Every structure is written in structure tokens, then in C-alpha cells.
Image 1 (tube, protein in one colour):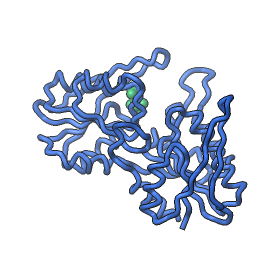
Image 2 (image 1 turned 60 degrees about the vertical axis):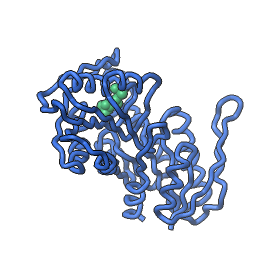
Image 3 (image 1 turned 90 degrees about the horizontal axis):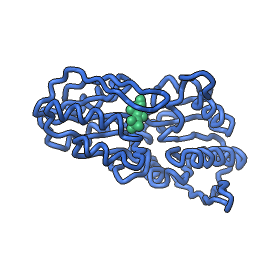
Image 4 (image 1 turned 180 degrees about the vertical axis):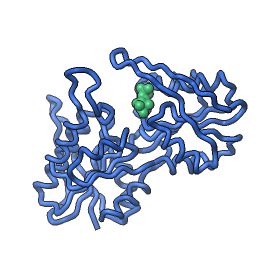
Length: 293
Ligand code: R5P
């Protein structure tokens, strides 16, 4: 059985995954030097061990990414026999192409760094687009939290539930959640201005009058995407609007924007530790790890 190294960004989730797998959890000593550089120490002996490094890369992304790289490289240097990087939130995954001349394709850089640091396999959750996995030369897997999110809402007594994705990229996610709720689903169209960041949402004709709607997305960052959708749904007469995402980045003001647009609840997973992270992805991660160990 593997040992799970608890990266500073995923201590609680890493412990839950260890529990699910019946694996040992290994602590990490992490601190910042006075000038801001990261210090990392894997506290137990991992020589000859198969090691899972659990470290999400939410905000502060660059700090958490650097900690991940230090952990992977230290694990290799400390002679772990195999290293599996579990990165529940994969930062930089939205910059997966050159949208404007001269831009860095950031996710390509991050993939190269993870491989160079020593990972033998890579596991993430609801990656922005699965195409990214093809950039890896090592084994790379994506697991989805959407069925778990669907199960969370199945405990509610939803009235004629309807699941909506804010853009076409999330329609498969909406389908999975809808499957758990025996609900209908659809998506809106979204356009983002690459320079100003403003978002235009084009509504489709959806029959949601007096029904409970669950909006699902992979990431909530500024909250603009979801707030646009929620206000359209409210105008169209939705009864209650619930919001769910895998990665609640939730920048300052995001929740307020979404509630002001008419949502009653925002829920996310523990891919990111936040005050809305009421759904755990520990089981789905553990299940995927069992398949490759
Ligand atoms: C982008 O396509 C993603 O799926 C999310 O919709 C987006 O990241 C949400 O960002 P924000 O909350 O800033 O609108």
C-alpha cells in the first residue's frame, strides 16, 4: 500500500483519502522563509515506498505549485519507488491555448514541470478540459466529482429539478448531475472578452418556471459566470436556484454577487478548502487510485 504525503494545500482531503485507502498519511513541514521562498520537509522515511503526493494548487497558486514541485522532487530524491501526484485543483488549466499572440500556454509549462519534478502518474479532479491530459507523457487521469454533487442534491426535496451548465464546456457535468436527480438538463452560451474579462451570457429557452434549478460548473472564480446565469433564471421564474462547483476558488465578492443574483445556496468540494466545501472528493480520488495501484 502507498503512503500519502499530505501537501500543505490538501491536508484534510489527503487524510480522508488515506483513510479510504487504509494507507499511512505522512506529514509535511512547510514554512516560508522571511523573503517568501518555500521550505518543505517530508517528515517520514519514504525510501522504497510507493508515494502519493496530495497537493491542490488553488490560491496562492504559485506558492502551492512550488510546494508541489518541491514535494515531488524531494520524494524522488528520497528514493520513493513510485510517485503519484494527486492535484485536485489543477491551476493554470484554463490557459490551455494561445488566445492572443505572444501568450504563454501556461498549462503546458506546468505539465512539463510536474513531469520533470518526478511524478510517474498524475490524478486530478474535474479538469477544465480533458484535452489537457494528452499533454502529459506520464499516465494522467481525471476523476469527476459530479456524481457526488448529484448525490448531495438528491437528499434535497427538489421541485421538478432542472440542471443547467453556464456554458457548453460544462454540459457533460450537468448531464452527470442530472442523471443522479433524474432531472432534465441544458446549457447556456457564454462569451468572455479575453482582454477585459467581461462575460456575456446568452440564455436558451429552458422550461424552468416555478422549478428548482441547480447550476453546475467546474470552477467559480469571480462569480460572474454564475451570477449572470442566476439572474437570467430568476427572471425566467425559477423557484429556487442552487449553485454547485468542484473548485470554489471564490475570489472576494464572488459569493455576494451570486447571492445578489438570486441563488440560495453555493456548495463546492474539498478540492479547495473553503467555507462552502461541504462535499468531499476523497472517495472518488481513492477509487481512481485503487485502479492504478
Ligand atoms: C470557464 O470556462 C470555467 O468553466 C468557469 O465557468 C469559469 O472559470 C468561472 O469563472 P468566473 O467565476 O470568474 O466567472
